[in-house]
Image (cartoon, rainbow, N blue to C red; front, side, top):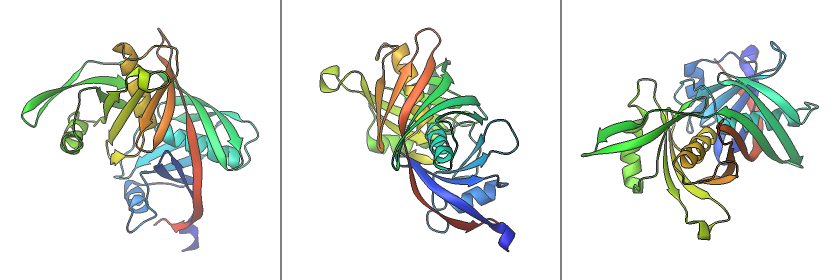
Amino acid sequence: MKENVVRFEKWEGLGNDFILVEAVPMTAEAARRLCDRRFGIGADGVLVIDRERRERPTMQVWNADGSRPEMCGNGIRCVAAYLVSRGTPQKALTIATDAGDKRCEVTRAGDRFDVLVGMGRARLGEPLVVSALGAEHRFATVDVGNPHAVTFDPYTEDAIDELGPIVATTPAEGINVEFCRARPTEQAEGACIDVTVWERGVGRTLACGTGACAVAAAACAQGRAPYGAPLRVVLPGGSLRITVAPGSLELLMQGPARRAFSGEVVIA
């Protein structure tokens, strides 16, 4: 029926791709169908935007498996760029999320968007130790509005595929997992870290904005990167620049967002 046909836009941040809809009631089953890459539109998640019911726009995130994460770093850049592309007059705007209000500054050059986001404060937790694959694996835990487990121990790609889902489901609420390798400083301009992401509710993704923030906070806490200077976090889909403030652990994330296409879809 016509009332079930809604407009959507497909956006991506470093290959982490999302279906954006406005003021549409969403369910876990609908999110799973929309994100299905064979039978739906295909995406890592659905972002529901509401500009009507509060003094600032809100962003609600749904993962591809129908779960509801608190926050999405790549997603909020896409939402901020979407709002500017749809005529929001100011280039600096605040977006309400389940992890609190986030301040965004959008720079536009034609169809290209670069977004700087104040991601709030990182909170360092107790280490997570996981017994699996015949060994104990130790991860730093960082909360940046959603939970992350970060390791700088070397793992092969096959080991990541085996260990990622185990670690991600060890806490009852789930946790995102980042496998990291710091580049020697002589091979990069400033501090630079390569990251492979295993997202709870999704699996391997090309990028994770909150994950990049968690990695930066853990790297600074472990003396692998300096506080107060932009750290380049290199993900399979591209790189983000993250700055961790000394003392407060306030985070700034800077990176791109891109509109891929738009269309209509039936949401039952």
